[in-house]
Amino acid sequence: MDLFEHQAKELFAKYGVAVPRGKVAWSPDEAEAAAAEVGGTVVVKAQVQIGGRGKAGGIQLAKDPAESMPRIRGHTVRRVLVEEASEIAAEYYVAILHDRASKGFLAMASAEGGVEIEQVAAEQPEAIVKVPVNPLVGLRGYHVNQLVYGANFDERARKGAAQLLNRLYEVFLAADCLLVEVNPLVLTTGGEVIALDGKVSLDDSALDRHPDLEALRDTFAVDPQEQAAKEKGLNYIKLDGYVGIIGNGAGLVMSTLDVVAQAGGKAANFLDVGGGASAETMADGLEVILSDDKVRSVLVNIFGGITRGDLVAQGILDALDRLGDKVKVPLVVRLDGTNAEEGRALLASSPSDMVVPAATMLDAARKAVELADTKAGA
Ligand code: GDP
Ligand code: MN
Picture 1 (cartoon, rainbow, N blue to C red):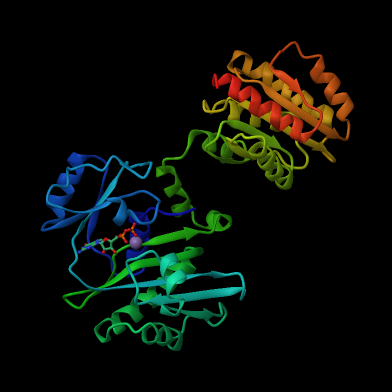
Picture 2 (cartoon, rainbow, N blue to C red):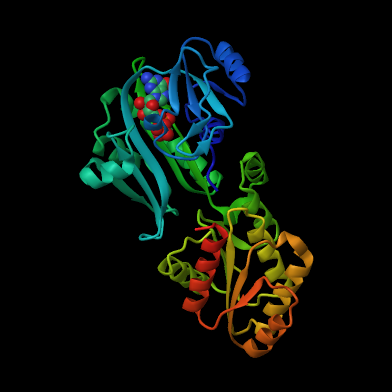
């Protein structure tokens, strides 16, 4: 789970990481009031979870904070962070993250802050100093020195940056983060070192240790299908196509996405109902997919192992029953493996004309794409 910038900064502030004074606003009126409260020149920062807001017009040194930024690169802006503007002398980059390769942590610093770090990594990798940190040892003075001296931070920034790194490491540990990143970390003309931006990725599997952070999720603009899927315990990811996909096993679902692409279609989602898919899971999954009105056909691709084909078929029939005339798009079903025969027979007995059987995966994908195209009048 990624925090919004303002949430990351609130977390930073709790641990003494210096951040600009600011206030979140949910409407132009609130933004105006926040600007008056913060005082002086303010920056208005769109709170959307994409990088490069600066370039996309999502950061404005505002004379008029009520000026709204309704959409940025397809993301709806529901709130802005109104902050006192900083006068920047230098922009740096620092981050602490998990490093799979060393099975430890990695601290990074660069004097090339304020630009996308991926770009720096590609164009001048030597400008990023990387220091492995053994979690059992922790972030020590010598690590911090390697970072601030290694990355050539301005002399005036060293002390502040060192202190900020130590506190950032506390945040990283305390909140079970996968990543904390500050880009840019700035040296102000007044000689202060502050986190002008903040990115925090939390480890979802540790969230039950952090009810306060988990609660932040409620304030997220969650996609309705993803929300419903999560409540039902389904492994669902929304994509931007129009062929709904259900399969059992991540590998099979991935291949299903591939064959749909091969057949000229675009998948609407990824949904893995797992190894022991029950009739209920199947019905839940279909319900989630069918509630997405971009979906014009659904491809159910099940290879029975532990999962039994007849139970899957029953799940499809249950879903059809449960959803009634909410089912407005065809379901192409390919069943194979354990009890596939029985499953197919069950489906054939369905009074619904929405179920379309298919013999192979590719055949199923072609049918699903064709039916989706017909539906679109293409
Ligand atoms: P991002 O583009 O989404 O990473 O958003 P950032 O918060 O990192 O801001 C992008 C850039 O906007 C920064 O690198 C700064 O150059 C500029 N910026 C942000 N806040 C201020 C500010 O208070 N004063 C000034 N002068 N520039 C700012
Ligand atoms: Mn940034």
